[in-house]
Every structure is written in structure tokens, then in C-alpha cells.
Image (cartoon, rainbow, N blue to C red; front, side, top):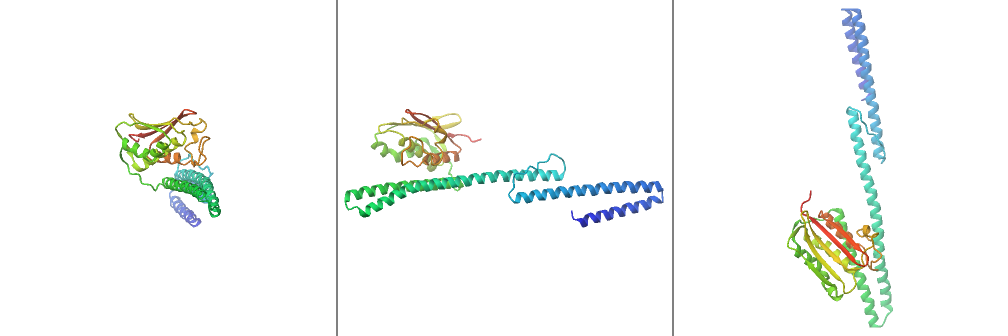
Length: 330
């Protein structure tokens, strides 16, 4: 409230008290005195409340200035009653929300910085290898060695292509720009589409495949769900010896349909299990050219479809991935 408004209130309050006192004076002098004293007390209390209100508003304004400057560590919660206290509590809620968002932004910045560092590291290795191979190709005259160098370059290009493609997929999922088409997917079609790209690899490596797929279907996006299961199957194959066994089974429960993918590979250490879905994480048993992004992408997709991935593993005996697709999302 402006000072001019306060002066007007004092002026009109004083005028009313004076007018009332003059009127009461014609009735009784004591009545006029009581009216003046009572009116002055009421006017004083009213002015005191206005000044108190002004101080609280100034305090809230200073809080807002601090918040605008980026200071979110303010505790201005108020348990008193009144409009100012309600405004103060609402401002406190806004500060808590901004504080939470600021923490999330800082976390995202750190994650982005770490991701960029990991990506640059992952791309640097194949790029360096290709640069070396290119220099050798320029000097090499023997045709057989030139073919070998070209094969190395081709493998590194495939690795870079796979990395960039999956990073783009992850970025789209993180940004929420991917539209999932929720349809009914027959389990047999899903398993067949997930395994098909790796059948040749399994044949070359003499890996046997056993499937036990029950009739039924799940709700989800066919292409993205196939991508998730395919990445898990690829991870299993990378950790299996030639001549191993891969088993895929489906299970129907009251709450969910599950797909179980088992291998008899090297297994995963208990200390590493909590980290296998982290981006760019490579365990002790990972291959040298492993990037560590396939399982992260699989988990992101399944969680986007409100599903869940569980893992059980034992060193030297293999690993089991259970992908749960819930029938009803509460």
C-alpha cells in the first residue's frame, strides 16, 4: 500500500472521529471523550495492522527477488492463518518446485557432459583405427594386406554406424519425441522377429536355440519391443562360447506376460548386476569392442511401455533375463 493511501486513511479516520466527537458533545461530554478514545484506538490498531501487512509484503518481495536471482535455499513456510500466510506458503511451494527442477537440471547437465565424454571416447577409438588403416593402405602395395586393412575399416565403420544409430534412438526416447503405437503383438511373431537377425550368427557359431512360446499376446509397439528383445539376445550371444545354448520361453501370469531369455555363457558378477543397464557400462567379461549401450536401450524401451526387466545370473553358469509386460497398468 502506498504512503499516500495510508495518509488518506488517517485523514478520513481522523475526520470521522472528530465529527463523531462533536456530535456526541451535544449529548454528553463523557460520551464524546469515550468516542474519541475508542475511535483513536481503533484507528491506531487499523494503521498498525496495515503497517504489519506492508512489512510482510516487503519481506515476500525480497524473497521473490532472491528466488529470481537463483537462491532456492529459503525456508519461508508459515503455519499462521491469513491471506499473507497463504501467499507465503504458496511461494514456499513454488520455491520447493524450482529447487527440485534446478537439481534435476544440474543432474541432467552432468549426465549430458558424462554422456558426451563417453560418446567421444567411443567414437575416438574406431576413428583412430581407421586413420591408421588409411595411412597403411596408402603405403601398402600387397593386395592381400590391403584387403585385410579394408576389412578392419569396414568393421569399424559398422561399429560407428551401430553406435550412432542407437544413440539417436536413445536421444529420441529421452526427449519423448518417439510415438509408441500400442497394439496387440502375438508372442510368437515377437520372438521370431527378435531372433531372426541373429540366426546366421548362431548357425556360424554352432549355438543351439530352444524356444517354448505359448499362445498369447502383449500390448506394445511391435518395432520398439522387437528392438529391446533383440538387444538382450545380442548381449547373451556376446557372452556365450561357440557351441552354447540359448533358450527363449514365455510365461503367462495373472498380472503379466513374461519373456525369459537364458544363456549358458560366462555369467555376470553380483557386483556388476546393478550396473549392466547403465549406458556405456562394460563388465569384466565384456568383449573389447563392446560399447555397452544395447541393454540401456532395451531397458528404456521396456520401461516406456510400462514393463520391467529382471536379471538373474551366476558366474560360469549363465544369465537369465525376464521381461515382464503387465496386463493392466494401474
